[in-house]
Length: 168
Image 1 (cartoon, rainbow, N blue to C red):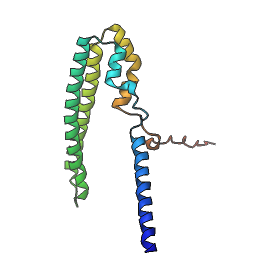
Image 2: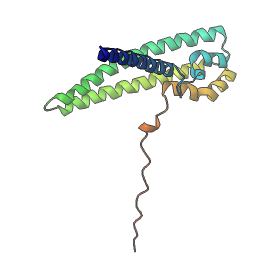
Image 3: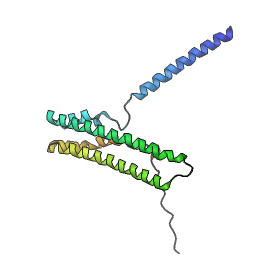
Image 4: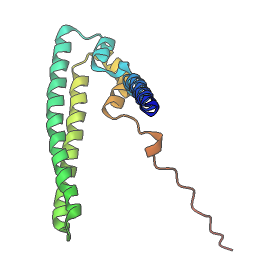
């Protein structure tokens, strides 16, 4: 009977610890993360640019079109990568097939980059001169949202300089 009471207390204690851990994780999950500042969000950028209603509607429509097309390309990219990496399990991977798939992936990635470039170029062209100055000044925030900065753990360390050869 005493052992049963001890187990009940331990179970209750573990449940409380789990709930506490989940609460802590939950609170960290919803905190702002570096590289994702609010000032880089489209509505904040629109406010900084002081867009008129016509510009705001145009840029929102362009953004929605860009997001839709980009998601389609990303979905296709995901499928190509799955197919590409499934070749790992073939006993004799066909190098020609691998090269073709890699070319398809690179072509698709190129298309995604061009799409994003054209989106920002179109956005820039929809602005007047004063707004373009603000856009240029704050473009880094927008770019960080599209392409978050690398985390330090993923950076390739700088290589040491090559050894000096003494020609004596």
